[in-house]
Length: 470
Ligand code: NAP
Image 1 (spheres, rainbow, N blue to C red):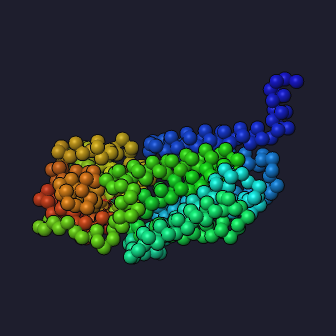
Image 2: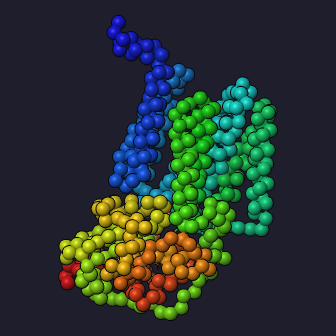
Image 3: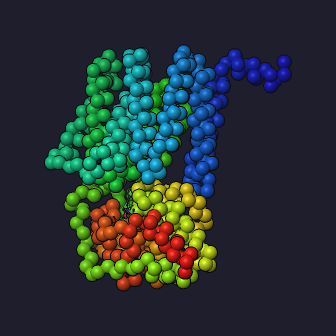
């Protein structure tokens, strides 16, 4: 027999080669998918690769030796695809953070339930190593499930978004944590103690709630990426329990990328993870204004249109208000109208503008803004002295000069987009509303700044119309 035919025959007789081969392909696809996601140009391709990897992993599972219930996998595949499709169709782009939180909750509860099932079926027969991985899987999975559900509720506004804090909270949290850890250690040595194992899972669920309620809704993206990393580690632990390589690889990738993302987000806000988790940012205490004094100068739509029409270079700086107003298409329309008049257009993107990493990039990409026009904070800041008009579209904290100039400001040290160095600044917002930090923004009182009030989408559409008529 030909060697190739022999190999195929061998693989058919030993289908685990197919399983491991498919898992290997899936792992490679996950790694390339993750790499693709590191740049907006390749993000879409990265997403497709990761999806293909997921499909390969599911299909590969059909070749598992011990598989007895194909119908359950098929039912799960269909149900999961339907829920995913529903998410894609009905969840708007602005609700993406809460959608992601919900996905984490699903992943984490799946890991937890697999752990509980494995404990029920084989608890006493497992080695100490496997039991320790199984305990971790259930604990991390449980706390990630409730933590993510609370995060989702806070982001959606169904649960109070402000931090819930009370006296002795940290001691209570420590008590829950140590009780959970105690149950974990006890059940390692006493696998027959089913009740202790269940108590550990329940304490994990409770700990997830307690961990997230003291954190304000605006910090939820950082919390979520941390929870994402816990969910990943829970999946990796599941992989050790089941001896499943794909879960170990995918879980570890997820765990560490989530952790790195949390650190990057904290860096961009100039805050430590501890400050996010235990600082209660966004609470009444930190809402105290830095106080700015002076008056704001309003500008009319016509005057703003004239300034823009006769500018050589205009830089748009989008923020959370662009997302709430869904003004991405309107800003693109205005930019095109200006470009037709020969104006140079650039967009300055702050790493934490909006409410999730890459929020502005995603929105602007949806409106087909050319990627070559998007500039990161470090690239755009030196351009402002030569910028005729900087247009702030629903951004506030990320352009607050207090972060740079006032060492006593709660956001001191947070890198900002320095629009105040432009020749003229036009700020588009609805009124006197503050940003996520709850701080007053001295930018709005500067002589160089003019306020153009109204919903960003409506204002931008009117400006585009005016420019066409100038
Ligand atoms: P921001 O500070 O939250 O300010 C948004 C501004 O948009 C508000 O002042 C609001 O003023 C205005 N606005 C809201 N709806 C509007 C509409 N329909 N039309 C026009 N304006 C509207 O936003 P940001 O400057 O983007 O800063 C993001 C903040 O979130 C930072 O403090 C960052 O640290 C934090 N954060 C971000 C992430 C992330 O991953 N991106 C994660 C965690 C925390 P009016 O109410 O007056 O209109």
